[in-house]
Image: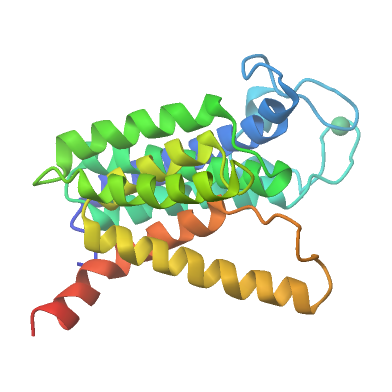
Length: 252
Ligand SMILES: [Zn+2]
């Protein structure tokens, strides 16, 4: 399953769309946490000069301008082109996991939202509903249109699992936004075995990273760790490698 069944042009179009969505992530990450609107022309962080269309081409503008603002010559962070490439990577991953252009596009947008949510969670330890709710709705649409048979158990496992932690901790470990997020992730996982793989990978990676940070003294026992990135990584592992894994271990 790990190969593209796409005509080259469709794959290229998805790659370019992914770059543009990645570029939009940079705008969202800069503005949504500060409560700013996402419309309006982007400007340089240093000199506030408004950016022209040719300065906003994903990755290429960064390369042509040698990573500097055209007006004030300040260095533009590597984060910007990397996040643009990240968007393209997610769209190509979506193409690998699906069969048609529309299916890949919808899954790509859902994964892109999840990636953007993860970056904001890492930055602020908070998940904005302005991203969470569209993510859930697109995941639900993807599930209804493309997952056969429809599987309510997968999102339910996540909701029950997070709901139990919410009850036990009195809302300290898990917020209501996390429950919307996990329901959307379950809808994308699409079946209960893949949802279990998602959760196992997420908690496994989360535990390893938390242990590493504790040992290095970078975090204390009661510090929080953004969990959305681990859920996103777990979902990618489950969608990319899960079907093959289940084939080998369950049906032979
Ligand atoms: Zn500037």
